[in-house]
Structures are given as structure tokens and as C-alpha cells.
Length: 122
Image (cartoon, rainbow, N blue to C red; front, side, top):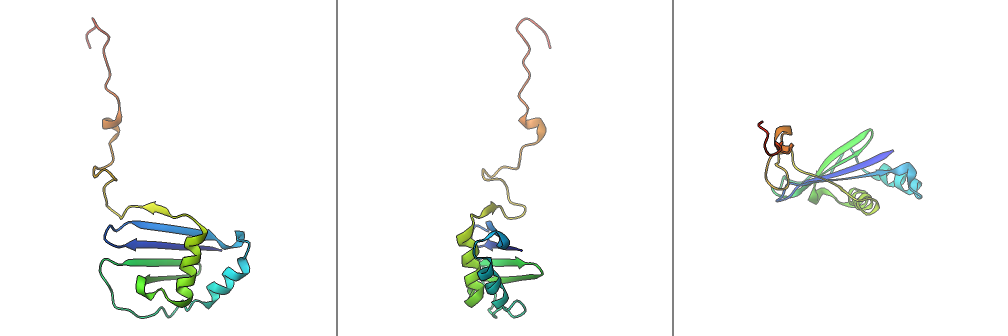
């Protein structure tokens, strides 16, 4: 079983994703007990908040999307545990330019110019 936590939002809008294979953990039984304690069909209510983190938690067949302030009780314990167990994969928000602000290069712009030896015409 995999537990996948994605965090997006905030001012920069960057996405971080953590993934843990529960069956490969030395304390897999504790993971399963925590996952069973999650009220998947009843996340805590909270009004939307702009520029705050949003967490998407997936653990087949369950999935939930919660605002940062909704992460309480077993929700918080699961997210914290996933984040402590593995390093995040970093991603840009959809449609965002590369880190230098420019679009990705096209094949034509990445090829080196061809040079003609001296004395020869191209």
C-alpha cells in the first residue's frame, strides 16, 4: 500500500510530493492502524483560505484534499509521518515557466552552430 501526500499552494505555489510504501516500513502495522483511524469521509470543516497550503492525501481506495488548518488529529499524524519518512519530490505549478523564467528550449535552440573550416564556403 502506498501513501502519497502532495502539498501545493502558498505564495510560491510550488508542489511537493511525498510517497511511502507502507509494506516496506519496519512498523507497517502501526501505519495501517493510523490509516484506519483517519475519518476519510469526514474531513474537518474549514473555510477556504487564499495563499495557504492545500494537502492531497491518497491511500487507495481513499483520497482527501484538506486545507492546512484541517490537518488535525490522525490527519496531522499521517502527514507528519509521511514527511518524516521520505524526501519530497519537487514540482512546479502547472503552466509555470522553468526556474530561470524562460520556457523550455526547443530542439533548434539547443543545437550548437555548425562551423565551416577556414577557406571553405558553406
